[in-house]
Length: 99
Image (tube, rainbow, N blue to C red; front, side, top):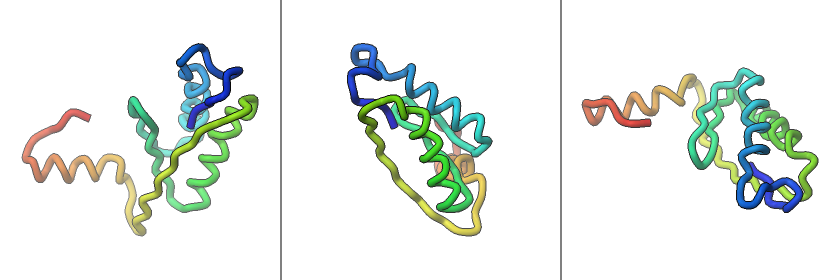
């Protein structure tokens, strides 16, 4: 999620506004992982996932236009998938990977 309108950009940079979104996600307490081109959030329910999206969007309410790209991978009765999915790949490869 990032602003695309001119009043919320500094040239081609959007890091100032993206940082506001990340700060809100971090303060929410949900598990997340920041990557160079997006953020992965682990929620326990669709309701919780949508509340995090709403929270993130609220951080950019002063921007006329905001772009969001969302993906959902819903697997019931699991937790800590941010780490266990990577651990599964590392186990298969029989080595640590860069992540």
